[in-house]
Image (cartoon, rainbow, N blue to C red; front, top):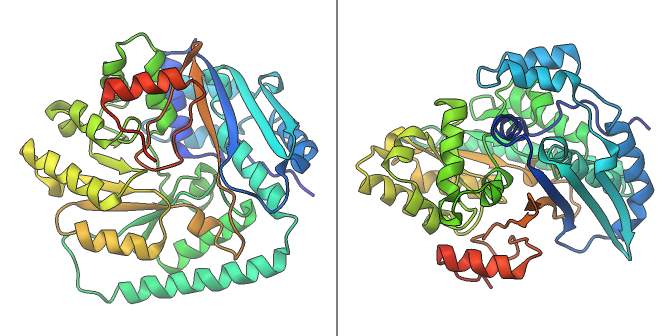
Length: 397
């Protein structure tokens, strides 16, 4: 069976954009990342250890092809020196370990951040694909194709609705928890062919290049979390991260992630300067309607026309939820919907809820204070309590 990782380009766009920003500003950061499965799998993931090891060995033999580097160089926000770095880059096997811990699978990546941060997405889709290979592939694909056809019918019915002030647009965010690489590609190609008026891109850079789609993504939690260790006062880490992003991208990639220490704490830092510079905000935890109303109220308080801003929703979405949120907000602001698992792994099997998160940077614990239960991940409870105190963030039960 061919290796799971087809190309180093097969990664979320925001990995490349964060990678570039951190390479330019904090190239010496040392970090620790850890894999976690948040739900109970059908069989112990520890059984996948040998296969995961083999796939990681293959990953560490890959390099970027010339046409892939040319593609990245053609993205106006990617700088030539970063592409030069990728020309000689290879993942180092010594920075990542795989262990069986009883029934659990332990995967840890430790080392220079610019060498280990890229492992995350590959690890997640390697584990996913290996896991789902043990199920009936043909039955799963039959179910997946039927459900994809139902989604397309739903979108076509939606197109008959009266027009709103702003158009509906959704994207594929499904690389990390997909059923398989082949299935994600089939989903993306089908949506691009059948409903191009609504389907506007993918976070998977490999597929964006192959199908001439818009690659979608800006930043993830690890970028913001890293700044908790970069020498600024903890209370100011969000402002420091946003400022460096602005200086790196000069108007491109202007969607800010809001839930690293909660929406309220984010808005306290998102003053008129940042609100004017960033094109919009991305939701990834908590009640999306409450979040969106807070965002619009904040823009109104700053006397910013909300029709010039975009709210992007990306937390466990399916199409009905996206339609509902669109109906609620589309006459007041632009919207966008990043749908992940429900596109790339809706095949009648329970998806794995797996993550690989940044735990520490430069020897210091870092954390996300999620607005949703179960999403906070930190090994240092003292630091977590301190972070809650600094940002007045309540514990989410």
